[in-house]
Image 1 (cartoon, one colour):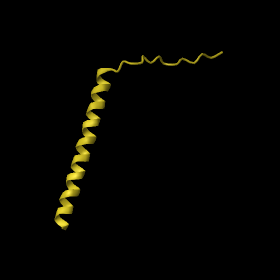
Image 2 (cartoon, rainbow, N blue to C red):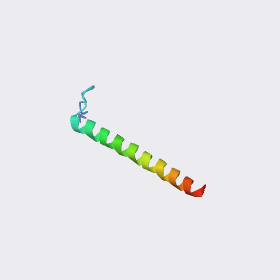
Image 3 (cartoon, rainbow, N blue to C red):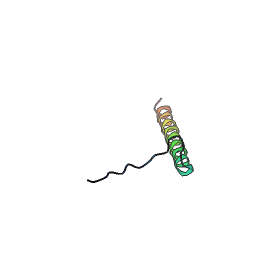
Image 4 (tube, rainbow, N blue to C red):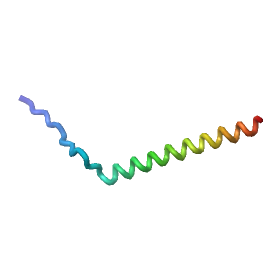
Length: 48
């Protein structure tokens, strides 16, 4: 019989590197959205 090993996940603890990566990705998304909105506003101001 073949045993399947399920990786044990510790709930409630997040590694510091994962937290840092999540914070970095969130900041990147926010910066991208801010840049996109500013470009749309700039193009709209040129049109009107």
